[in-house]
Structure formats: C-alpha cells, structure tokens
Amino acid sequence: MKKVLVVSLLFIVSFLIRVFFWIFGFSSHLNWVIYDVGSYIDSGRELITSLIKGNDQVIKSMLFHPLLGFYATGLFSISLGGLIDKYSAGLLSPILFSSLMCLFVFLIGERIGGFKMGFIAWLLASFDPYSIQFSTTFLDMPATFFSTLFMYLLMKYISSTSLKGFVLLGIVAGLAFSSKHIVIPLIGLLILLHVKKIKNCLIIVLVAILSYLFVNFPKFLSLENVKLMIHANVKGGGIGIPAIIYGPIEIGKLYTYPWYILTYLGLGYTGIGVAPYLLPVIGFILLSYQRLSKKNIINSEIYPMLIEWCAVSLLPLIFLPRNYWIPLSKFPGMNVESDVLVKFFFPYYYTITMPSIAILVAYLMGKAYVDYSYKVGRKNILAQRIFEFIVTIFLMLSPFALAANIIYPFWDFIFTLVINIGKQLPSIKRMAVDSLIICLTILITSIQFTLYINKRRKIR
Image 1 (cartoon, rainbow, N blue to C red):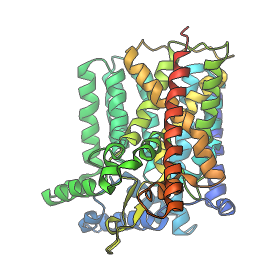
Image 2 (tube, rainbow, N blue to C red):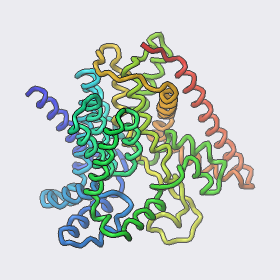
Image 3 (cartoon, rainbow, N blue to C red):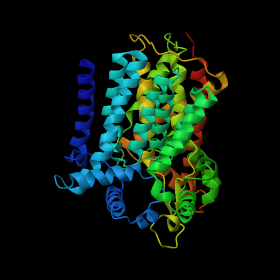
Image 4 (cartoon, rainbow, N blue to C red):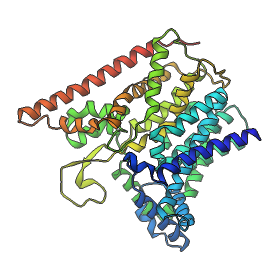
C-alpha cells in the first residue's frame, strides 16, 4: 500500500508541474517554443472523427508518422474539449505520457539501486527544464514512454523463461514503434544486446510487428497507401543515408562537415526558445569527476548497462537520415523556388535520451551510498568502448548546448557563417574561416578529452 501511495504521489507531482507550465501558461513567461500544436491536435481530432464515420481518406495526409500519438491526442481533445479548450485538452495527452515516463524512470532506478537512486532519477527527469518543455511533443513523448517501459520490462523479464514476459515486451515494442519510428533502432539494439535466445527475440519481434499493424491498420488498407508511406518517409528523412554522412553533400557544402558532425553528436537540441537541458551537463561534470579523481571506480555490473542504454538512445539521432538544413523549396507546405536553407531538424528529437541520461546521472550521483542490487553480465569490450565514446562526447558537448540555449543561440549562427567561406568580401570570408576553425577546435578537443578520460576508468 505504501508503494502505491509513493508511486501515485510521484506521478501526480510530475503531471501537475507540466500542467502548471503548459495548461496554466507559465511557459509563456519563459518564451519557450511549442511545436505544431494546431497541426497535431486538429489532425488527431480529424482522424478520430473520420474513422468513426468510416472515412479512411484522411489517412493519405498522415502517412509519414505512425498513428498512436494522433489517436491519443484526438481522444483527449474530443473527450475533454468541453471542459477546457480543445488545444489544452490535446496537450494533456503528451503531458500524461511524459509524467508516466518520469514514473518509470523512478521504477528503473529503484530496481537498480533502491529508493534513493530511483528518487534522484525521478527528480532529474521530472524537473529538468528541457523535459518540462518537451512534455508537449505529441509523438516523441509516447515513443519515449513506451521505450522506457520496454527497458523496465526487459530488466524484469530478461532472466525469465515466461512466454508472457516476452509477449508483453513485444506488445510494448509495437506501441513504441506506433508512436514514432525513431525508436525502432533503439529497441532493436536493446533486443540484440540483451535477449540471448533467438526464439525469444523472434517472439518479441513478431508480436511487435503484429501490434504495430493493429494500431496502424488504416494505413495498410491499400497497396497505394503503403507505397505513399514509403515515399513520404524517404522524402521526409525517415529513410535514407544518415545526414551526418550525406548532409553536407546534399546541400553542396562539404566544408560544413565539422559543424554537422558536432551537431549530430550532441549539439542538435539548441535553438531559440529551447529550455536548457541540464541532465547531460550534470552527467558531464559527474563523469569527469569520477574519472579524474581518486574515486575513479566504475561498477562493472551496472555501468555498462547504463552506458549501453544511453548509447542506443543516441545512435538513432546520430544516424538520422533527416538533414538538418534543406532548401526552402523542399520544406513541406512551401511552394516556392528558392535555394535558401531552412532548418528541418528540431530540438525536441532528443527527448528520447532523457530516461537513460537521468538514470546514468542518478547512478553517478549516488555511487557513494547506493547498494546496487541489479546484476547484468559482462559485455563485449570493443562495443562497450564505442558506447562509452558516444555517450561521453555527447555529455562533453552539453556545456556548449547549454550556453547556446540560455545565452545566445550561436550554433546555427556559426553554420550561417561557415557557408559563406567562398565569399569574396574579405570580412565575411574571415568570419567564415574563423567559424570553421572554431568547429574544428571543438571537435578535435572533444575527441581528445573523451579518449583521455575514458582511458582513466577503473573497474571494480
């Protein structure tokens, strides 16, 4: 009974803080940006009403994303629209998923290291300004919640022989895929890394596919829809060559590679009206302290698992096919002829990293007093080193991202300078060269420091 009360209270607090910011409007005093409220809520309402009437034509305008987030948003907006305005009602959907995500962050932390670690992780996930701001993402928040729930269930059933557990994992995976496709590689890697028996892997994958087809069945009512869905994902950057590799080639500016690499490694969540993402900064400070101090000891059971989870949360973002910049003429809804580059990569994509980073930070923060009871097997050393490199460089870049979000949004501005490197005007050319040198310096220094502190790890 006590556990139920604690869990209920944690959920209520996470929920109310988000309602305070977004339903009662406190976020307006902070100038935080909110994305696509009208588009997603109106589309969700239209989807629900159209399906009730038996009209599936609306699906043709919604083929890029899976449908679960639209279902949830539409249902909240329609059912609660009489009590509050339809847009505030629709916002309660992602806010609910965000609050549930915070709750399962607590449960994962508690399972690993007891109540203290779980509570610290919950505090970090619930009150990080970035987490509060992007509790309003209609697709990313359900995707983040279901991927967090998948991790919780994976820890619970990984040593089990129960068919029920692996079926449940498959259902949750399918719901995550039905929220946003970006979690497919995340959950796929978790399955490959943790589920050892091929039979169990196949059960999870098969049930996930069936769950996805069930939730998104209106999309598969015709072959034409399937073809249009594939086309939409290729055009919209859901399928294709990773932008970290092909982006500068696509825009015809190869000298932007250092900027692109840094952006996809960890500076992609900066911009005007973006709240500071404090979790990576705290993680960077704690990890650096652990490595550079005499207390440089890493628990050989827990640490690899946490680094692994953080890394597989980042990999889909690092290798995302969506290009950061595209010509204005290719931007959805724009019927213009223009070579002007516009932003096509949005800072809320990194919400998927919040649960794993919160747990990692709680682990680093609580090492002194937490008795870690959760056990995992040793992992491949090379893979572990690669995962450590990815996570460490992401954390190391976070102070630059913090400065870009609270002081000046300089990161995109640096890009606008770098692309002018071919200009003949000496003053502009000089600023462009200086900006490119800044990018190269940050990149080289980050890599060197990352390699250095990762060499200083000691295993207990």
